[in-house]
Image 1 (tube, one colour):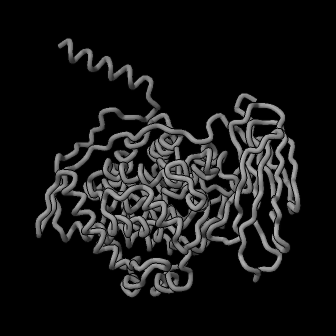
Image 2 (image 1 turned 180 degrees about the horizontal axis):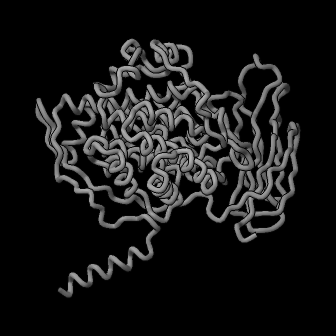
Image 3 (image 1 turned 60 degrees about the vertical axis):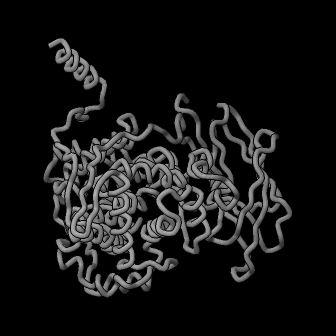
Length: 513
């Protein structure tokens, strides 16, 4: 009796300090094991990969065209037979979330499941495809000799909270059927190459939703149970929990929930392109749009894609994640024919910059999932697999851009011929800009410059003019003591016809000012 009383007293005390909506003892019952036929497992893996392709193709034309606004109902979003193949051939860059996934799949296939983090980092850093935001910042860091996970840390990567790993974490869940903690382990290794904090949590959450979609056939269960992988004190958790609660409050009005999200969660403090702008590539708000589609779509594939797309911002990657998660739950064969039309003629096409097609990744994905099932205590035979189901465990807490508050975006718009001096009062800055050449046909070169803060040399940096190896920002520095600072950029022997272009300077103070 005393033990029972103590248990309930402790439970009550913990519930009193946890965020509203947090459920300690979920009614969800986890089976100790889950058996699927090999055919069903393959169907779900195919549904996950095909669902991503369908989603990203559908949302592609609207990507970041609707920033801080939803896509109105009267705005048509095209879909027709042959559209997938046409887009894959004519706009291969649209599939950056897919070819990043496939890069990591290829490393596992080539080097095994215990491949070191440097192998994954090297693979995408030296790939021929173009990258943006946290991925590109990490690529630059890797090419300059920095080791992961420092490459994704917010002190070295101003895009640490951006969407990047979130959009490419699908593979981690698809190779971990029923095993969200295995997916989190994979995400810990790979996701920290390019992201940190909420940016990393986005990938952890997506991976966990995929993993649980193999076991549960209710999207509400998947969304809620996967969230247990995320620390409750993180902003990412709080944002997702808000979506879940607002969905309960406004069950038939996704637009009302969208407005609530904009009011509470649309403020950007990290990505230099989104601060003081309506552009928002932060992982939280875009993950919230994934949930909008999944929860309000309620298992309807077309409705899920449409809502995740019409929510705006990164409106190709969000329906790609949503479509892949729901596609995994439904299975390839249960994705409506309307959404699969034209898919078969594209399934043998290699994604650009890779030697992998959908048909190939279906096959490799099944192999990897079977191997992971066995590695985690399950069983596999010729006809069926038995998964040792994992209850989600919370990953560690980490936070980017702590105690930072943007106060000014100062226009610079100046070519740095010799030096540039900027004075500001605060605790940090990001100087946006790029290495450029006067003649677009001139050979690519690497420019040099040095950063001085308050008269002391802080960093020497290289600035490739080549787009795939570029440095995204000229310089940045956080965690300076509060006060007045002088930043000086000195260009080192710039060759004729090449220059550094400074665009603007984002200035931070601590939150007490």
